[in-house]
Length: 425
Image (tube, helix red, strand yellow):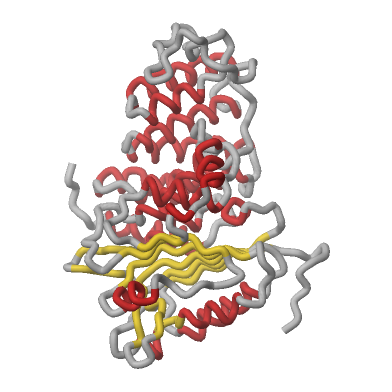
């Protein structure tokens, strides 16, 4: 097949594939559908790191590997950047000793007929030019696949694709979070960074922050990242929590300046009141200071300062101004950082509804607010709190015509299930 890789018709593509869930002793090790729902609300241009027109394909619950192959082949033929995200259970065809991504319904005896061979990925991606293909993995290896991974020193490469991700060993008993730790941190870094980090930075941040069990295979291993890349990652670490980029008007009029020499680098001095500002010169942007407080675990102080700035902006610019909405989003992300997903969900929904009155439903800021709301709602463990926020979230998602329909459908299904669940407050 001849592919035209250049010219004005260039398009990008995001292919999201959820395989079979991995379960150990009734504990879910990886929930592919939850991972897909979380990463699926991130705009395609953010996932790709490219502004070219892009398409997204979701494959969740597929049972026929040939169906997946057709989608993979179509994605590989795209003329622009391509990102393939794979999550689920990695298994082995014991007869041929070939690695496969287990699909829904795959068993040990049906791997050859119901799972996606790793070799198919190699075949479909090998003809793409270097620098245009990224594969992100969040997998759990089962008992059949893990010894083979150790014996072969990891997964077979997928040249010319750049491969990032983790493969968790089968002894892992699973965690309490619905979305896998690595995927969650990958999304969080995209969500909070003022400019999109590189994929190397995203992987380094996520692998370091995720609660990965001992023995986890990381691709590439963090120790294999070059010193310049690691330094670059630290230099570009997020400094404030606004999602994705595209900053609205600054609440403070002056650019960020270095802190006053008398301020302690470890513990920032208490800012003066009315309106509060970071230590240093008047007019400094307070957001990096507030984010630094939250990053050190001083969540109450960070939230108090952010709320004070929000009140100041409300009085100055009005309740429906872009500036006020921006500060509501900052408070939402601070609540997420503090683990208060109830408040975070409420604030993100409110920000999304306000942005809908100011911007087009397809605007990146609108989609980012919806992504924040949906992600935080999926983290709610209490049925009563999720039920309370669910209807407003559904109304917000319904107002977004470019949203993948399955995300709204999954949200409605979970809300219906929650309506029959007991409360545990």
